[in-house]
Image 1 (cartoon, rainbow, N blue to C red):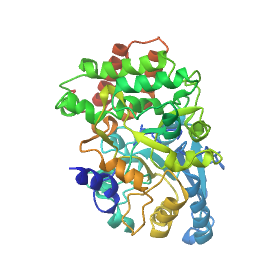
Image 2: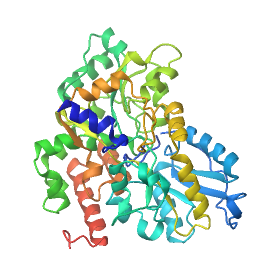
Image 3: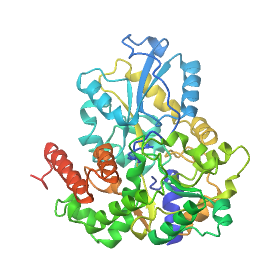
Image 4: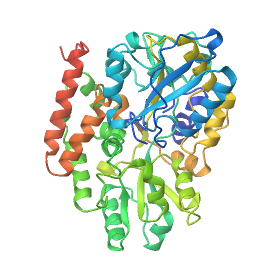
Length: 458
């Protein structure tokens, strides 16, 4: 069973299923997920010029949520311009504003040439209406090397509309500082109760237990959604019942328990005093400084944390465990992430297709793996060499149970990621109850399902 889990998670892009996030100021989120790179300023307004022969002189506008486009991709964008004469104008929007800005542009007929969006077979229809707003990419050369599961999650009725460009082979786990744990004789917690004990010991010794950035509006939602496999284990048939409208979020006691546990963690001070304004972009420095002992991050972030520590720590000084919500012991699998779509109203469709082809070449996939710590692999089977550490491989292999995160398995959840996050914050500061948060999720799901004509709701 362990080998099966490892194959699913590590070999997904080499011909098997792989990893949403979720949207994020880090990412997806989308996932939501979740979505991780430094913010980039828009380099200009959308280009209205007609494409030149061969694409020379064209400027492609590429709009994405913050941290969906890494520095390494922008570097490749410069190489793409040198090769083709086509310039990429990366327009990066704050995570909590992105969807509103994007849909305003799409609905007004003024969309960017390329736009980012969380993948997901439900979400790309209900959230982005890709059959109307995106170009069919099924005939592109890179489709033959596109991971099967990624293909499914960016397709509608057999047509591929998006290209996931995100490491979907690992997910977010709790990363902890081994040196700090050893100093206070602590072990990695295996359940919620042990997590509380660890946090209290750290706090008693003037170490802030967990860095949980809520300023971006997305990261904290994973404390709930990443335990999807455990929820399904506790409530067999949960996902199917929710997707068939046979069960409401507010009717699941385990959901309420998860939210109340997070409220308890906040009330005890285990996220520190600045969690409402903390941002994911500062995660590496926060952990590298030793001020915080834990955070939730992807395995590739460990290298970034070590690099930010100015030599105080190495990658070997950090370990991982699962998010402790509801005594979670089921490895979370997240086979969805931010994708790139070509706007159907673009005047530069051919040039945009060239960009996607360029980014999926073997040498450029490898460049992303080699130059961005958070990317250990991408969902394209082009003969690349993944960057998984032995520790990551051993960690993933140590679990004989795995389950998909909620945002990938439950309809009409990922599109309300930020609204859900806002309600969670309202609960954490005492303006809402856990029951009210779950009722709000149900109301938004009903609205989305009705608009989509979902027979289970109608």
